[in-house]
Amino acid sequence: MSDRDRGWDFHLRNLSNSARDSSVATDPAADPSVLHSVKKLYNLCKEEKNDDLVARVYPLINKLFQRSVASLSQSRTSNGLLLLDILQFFLDFGEVVLHDADPSIRTFFRSCLSREFADPVVAEATLDFINVNKKKLLSSFPTLLPQFFPLLLKLIAWNGEKLEKAFLKVFPAVMSSASFLPLLSALVDLPILVVALEKVEKSSGSLIGSSIATIQKSTAPEMLLALMDEAYTGSTIADGGGDSESEDSNTIDVADPLFLELLKDENDGLA
Image (tube, rainbow, N blue to C red; front, side):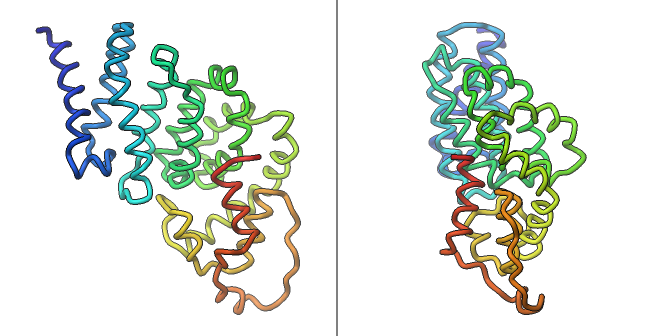
């Protein structure tokens, strides 16, 4: 058996064993060897250009994706890099295994990136993924990036100049006839989005891995809702009056229709 064959079998076994290991099965990203095996198997499939090999890897990769997504709400580990590598496999070999990558990418945006946008490593890797695959994304899934521009704007709003060049390459891809006007309003309100995110972090702690439930329990001032609403929709902030001291003591109402609509915009993209 060649070194390549031994490496192939090792990484297949590693992914298979990870599904049976109770600690790794419920949080795959917690084991760095899982990400390493995904990368190695992807590279071997690219080099060999063998559909049979791709067909052997796909069931393990697909199950790993499902487990990783299911673990997001409980995981203390960043899942972004692992999921992005799996998405690359789906994009490159989807035709071979009849896997439509569109739902998987949308799941990544809604379930993972909405939690991990403040992680600079995940944010940069996401923009790199989009830039590398931009031509295919635009031709195969033309509505995908324009739909999720509010979430993509959060990457640059929170991570700033470090991601400027990568984001500017992505930016033309988020423009469409449907997104143009709301995108224009969102760009005007981008500084307000930055302030809103800073207020959430100040009130609720680190934004990395923050779930919707955490933000809903935040003691951020009521004005934050208006700030974030304007940042996403371009609506005008109403002058609520009152002093800042009383505003700072307010708690976000989790049933507030405005807040629920904001969460929909953030995680589901544009309608």
